[in-house]
Image (cartoon, rainbow, N blue to C red; front, side, top):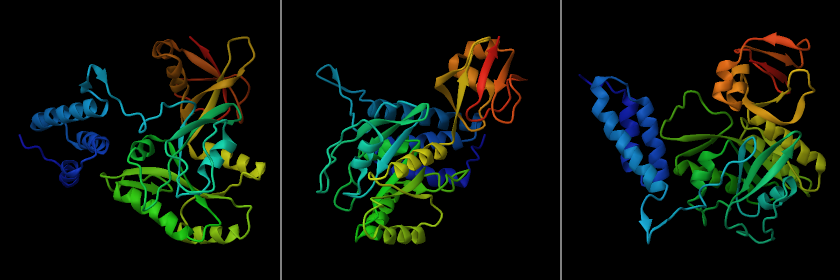
Length: 331
């Protein structure tokens, strides 16, 4: 029986064979498997590809032991915490570390000379009733690009490209970040295309943050970037302005495409802390599944309080929730 593979499959397969980075090779293998038609004609291809994917996973996870101790690289992975994981990237001296320190309780090394940050550092940003994980990273430039950044960027929910609005070389610095990531099959974009128009690439939603905006002549850099990247969301920030920092927090939350749902027990007041986090469009059943799949299966109906709803509105499991809704489960 013929395999009947689409033309895009062969293009992606060539990329898979050429790729040397095991993390990127694993991603391409998973894309190939998802693209492959599932029928008897592809059974052997599926089995071979699954074996290669398994071998790559073992390689990445440090499957080979040295002196009886499992070796694991840690710089390319930071355990996810909070509602989402957001990566700060940018050229040298763009202010990523000072921004992380201002938005979180983390204390990264900060200095006036470039390349102060050598390793990724995570901190938790408070936004109203939830926390979002921010990760500072080493700078990206033609002179330096740390390979462990690739997996961190691929794994993140959102990218903040931090640039110095007062830099005399702002155009070249920003273009260099885009180009170096593009060369490594990561494409920064304003919105992720659906379906992806280049399956060999990882597309990452990105906000351009024009930092140090309250300093002299910073508006020149802002105008320059608006002209260069008109489709991107561009926001200003400064550690000198609480209003700007709070505005950036709100933009980060809005860009993540998530909602917060609060729970209440029958006959009790709602608990307006530690909300359930769902994607926009998440349903009552989705919320129940975050508690436990058995709980969701037993769920009969729910009551919801929120904007544009009457208090205690009885809804079915497929009812779409909004940010800030309060839900009462009935099993």
